[in-house]
Image 1 (cartoon, rainbow, N blue to C red):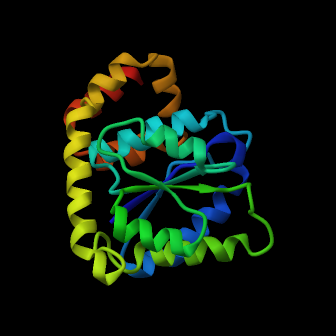
Image 2: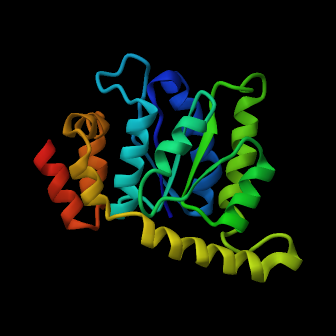
Length: 211
């Protein structure tokens, strides 16, 4: 699995800590981490949580990433931004139980974490424990055991509903202020990471046009 890490500007200073915790846990599992930044608070490319959502949706819809880990001060804004787009199911997680149940009950492809609220002593340990429960035990198996069948059925129903209510990503991007989208893909290492892994030519072509 290719996992993308995205930090918006208010919590950019924690990027290296978050990335280290993520890699420590998931790389031994065979997963790959692509760090899309922001890398520091004074980066030339400044991402808001809304732009983190735009970037996350581009990565998931293009196949450049299989999973997105993002967040903001509380995690709420990043979650809402991610869930504004098609083919994205982003959960708000604060502890390892949230991580495990989201992976198995909701079977999403993105998470938004609170990187300021409640993030104090032991914060990096909580990150490691969450990443273990999120990526170390599979996805979509249902929970608890007596709810496996209905939980899996409900996820399929949700996917079907969302397929009818959300339009394709390229249409969404074309309707958004192009400067907002351009800012979302202006990161220092975006091009080298994205174009090497993008699998959807229509999205790649649109992004190339912006850049």
